[in-house]
Image 1 (cartoon, rainbow, N blue to C red):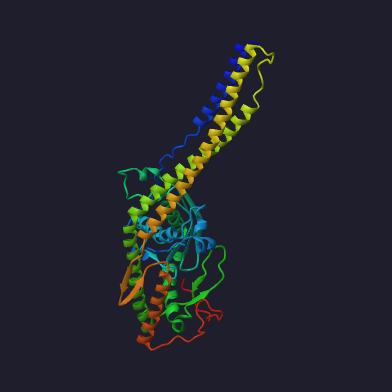
Image 2: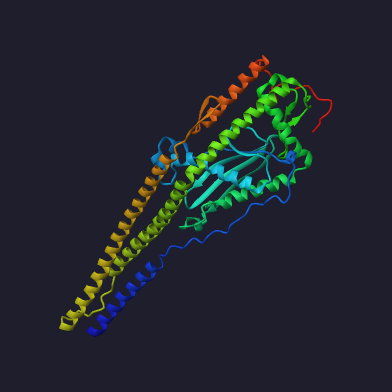
Length: 440
């Protein structure tokens, strides 16, 4: 082999290696997320009679924070779970579902309520995953009869068009999730028969009365084991409309619904204040996640290719003859240069990969900083209801339970009837007397 041929071969090997590196690194391009198709909720095409409209209670969501992360928030960084963020979302996301349901004209009053509130239809949710990139919710819908409509997981990636400057802020990046839930609820309702629909608000009213005055209402309802997704409660008999106890309970129920309206309106105000910083947080976390994933991919690629270059440089075969001639010496020198360049380039690629890894850590820290800033802006407000101060935080459930206790006191003051401990209610073990006729 001539000296020129050897050097040419070495150069060719070096150029080939460089070409492979450039080709693979050039292929590390982040795939752009295209805007999601915009789904729309099914709208009412006729005016639904008031007695056919079902009231809906969207209960505060379960934040879905594992106990370990709740106790040690720093452990949630890997899965991007911030307890403070999730608690804010548990109050905020239900308001978006409420707005979607209200916009359809298919339902009666739609409220965001604490978990202990009871309306005609109840929507329970758990946040499985939430970031600016993806939203996943576990949703369970049931009605006052105890009938479970469905339990389903909804997962969607963000509609990135809402993150653009000047985009319509009235549409949430995950509006498709709420549209899917609304359409599924409507589809289930439409397959219920008229008598089944009519029994829902009737049983909701009787269950409220039974909770407030079990001694007076316990023989109106029966509780049974649901069969094939059927109702858990059924009407045994109806009270007389002019019954003074029933009239009092109905008046108290109106006060309770006014309280629920106040609570729901407060969550609406909370959501309005939260909307802009929350959208900003989502947009920022989306960008951070995209950049972080890109950097991780590039870092891994650079480390692997760098290591490959080092191995290739060391293992490069000797192409020059070793006969002691001047030409042989020149050839070996050129070959050493190529080999050294390959090894040096590989080392630099590996170092670059580690530097990229450090940048990913910086983006993770930025997500944490954004989350902390958002949590400080999501501080709950305090509302005054009939002289009672209700702090709408994660303990709103306990506050509403206190309100219900006051309603019991109010009933006792107005009627002089005190609920006897151990009185069997509709859910008790002691069954009420059988009815002569089942009106439902």
